[in-house]
Length: 122
Image 1 (tube, rainbow, N blue to C red):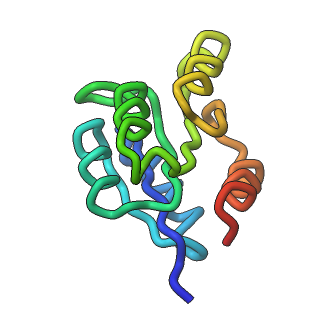
Image 2 (image 1 turned 135 degrees about the vertical axis):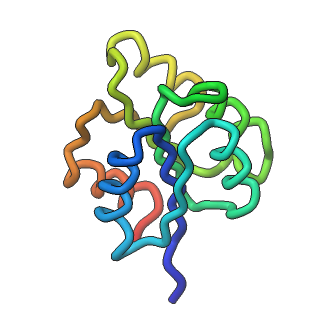
């Protein structure tokens, strides 16, 4: 059985590696550190889920989210926004723009895994 693909988008290489270590046993992971690379990888790889930081160089996470939702093939891909930005002012905007879930950094790993399982299974 092929592993489902998760695109991890975060400008912090340590955060990407932590997320990769958490997920790579059960999922195929693809990583990007900026907005331009994230959209490019999403188009090439057609992931089953995107984990998206908001504070990204090259356009920011909201731009990536808008672009993902504007492409029919990618618009159905679930997005979990994981951000260290102020939750009060960013969570509702992320959900309104098409994110499926919002997690405040540092993310509770078990909760994040449960969200992924809920959205795409194993």
